[in-house]
Structures are given as structure tokens and as C-alpha cells.
Length: 89
Image (cartoon, rainbow, N blue to C red; front, side):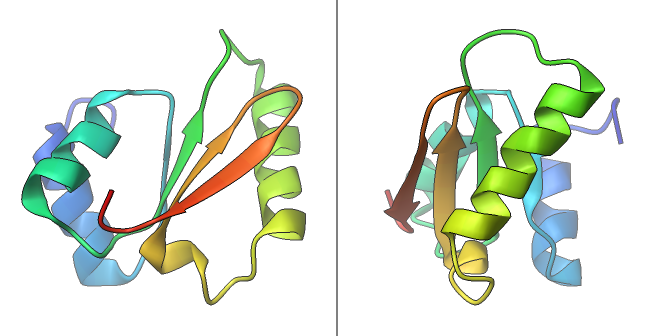
């Protein structure tokens, strides 16, 4: 889905009950403008991540945030912290 529009990615995630994982700052803005209550978003911040670093960030999110809370949350993760915000932002 590298070439899909951000709105299309959000729509697919919502339809399929998925969580979006991205470093793209457009996603929280789009969710906020829509007043969306889902899909969930894991936002990687703080620079470029290797695949293993990105997976480690996601692992930390999964340890820190309850699975039932992810679909209604925006989780911002960097190399040092995990922060969760409820939808809508």
C-alpha cells in the first residue's frame, strides 16, 4: 500500500479493523479533521528506523497499550517513550 492515498489507507484499515503503523504526520491530522474515533494509529517519531527498530517500537506499544484500546487510540512512539491519545484528537 506504499502508493495508496492516506485517506484510502485509513478507509481500508477502518473496513478491515486494522491499525495503521506509519511515520507520516498526515495521518493524525486526517483523523483529527474527520473527528474519527477509529482506526487506531501507531505513529513512529524521531527519525528513520531500520526494520528491526520499527518492530521494537511496535513491540513496546503492544506491551504498553491494551489490545482493546488500540483501535480507538493514536499512539506516538519514539526511541524513549510511548504516549497514547484517545480518538478524536
